[in-house]
Image (cartoon, rainbow, N blue to C red):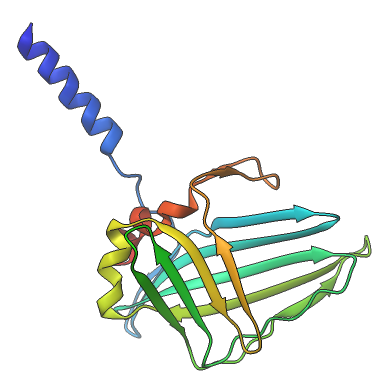
Length: 188
């Protein structure tokens, strides 16, 4: 009986602690090089007074160089301010263990694209690619992220990372605080 209980506990632990498999949108390995990118994952959603904004992450590995791809989607009938990325843009991630991880933007200016839909909404899409440094990569594997600060060309914005939220857009549940813990293994 004791062995049966121990075996049951072991199987339950394996099931609970098992990590989900990596999902890729792109996984190419050819004579030019290698490129691997994970599926986009929503880490922030705000809906207030007819204005919506969403932030998505995906991780990429280009010939052994890991990066974070971030995409912003904003929708409103009001004016949407353009936040531009340039070579001095950075993402600062405050970890639960007290450390701060800095990611640097590639040397490419980007202010996004504005698209007006048939319902009169302005939609701004902006993307940026941020590079990890070797000294901060390991901390992200073990500690959850509590806050993200983005330094744009002319502005800085802070985002509190939630433990869990259910999206109004697609009714899926997301765990942004643990994004790196769960997904960095996919680009190593």
